[in-house]
Length: 404
Image (cartoon, rainbow, N blue to C red):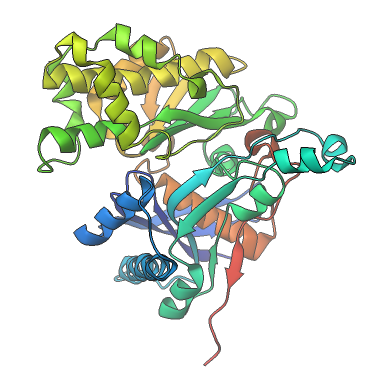
């Protein structure tokens, strides 16, 4: 059986750095198998990270500055791809998600091909707007610097088909983490939280019953709060130990859960455009009358993440899962994990490691698989019932090195 070594590159909404995963992939499409050879996170240079965060929060750039930032990020991604290969067999392909700096879901989207294709008035066409998602770190630069074929721009095809362009990981989750008899939720806790609902494989037409969406904030606002409380000396609450010393203010959490995003039915996606610094500022204003200690404040923000996950499950899943498998940086937050277990009982809250897939590098692994599906297998990578796209699509643009 042919083995292909692929590098997956990913930097999420936390902007902590670039996750790189070097994997061996066998199989074709539905029978894909993955073995992780090496995984590492390469932090951004401080000045570059600050610039990215500023842009994510709506900072303005000239076109010249935007192109310079695009290339600077691409150079860091290429360096990560080169470094992950040191001491390992060389890769044959790169899948790079890039760095999301802006994500706008479509507005006025209609469901169903018949409705989309019917004649529309000029006013209706004006109201219907495709989504837009911008990932910096252009793949052609990565190809040029690494001399490896690179697949990037994964979200564009789904957006063009009327989808949200997110989340794109659920199909990979389905083939790596579904269980023959148990219903599972794969809950990513990066800067933004997202869920993949996986019915038991023994169910008839199980793939059609896979769902996924963004649940709301993961670590983004919690990390921002820690940075504010420590004047930048800490960037996150390690193990959730600081928040664990406080008491969450549930009245505030319940107030925040009334926000439109939490009430919106899937498919849905979000980012720092909604759950960023401005959102945290509004939350802080809401909390002014409660006299919360720093620990209480962090406990309350942590509770919002846990409660938003539980709220999303109970309101939008077809059934509660038997198991919840956590991944992403938040899976290492023990206090957050405890709160999720309390709110999601009797489901068992575990990690993807316990099912054989690295939780820390699962997103990077996913984009390695998506690149493999696009480049080798010509296999659609999206799930229309997850993203809202009109049809399955091949995801990603292919960039080939110039022959020497």
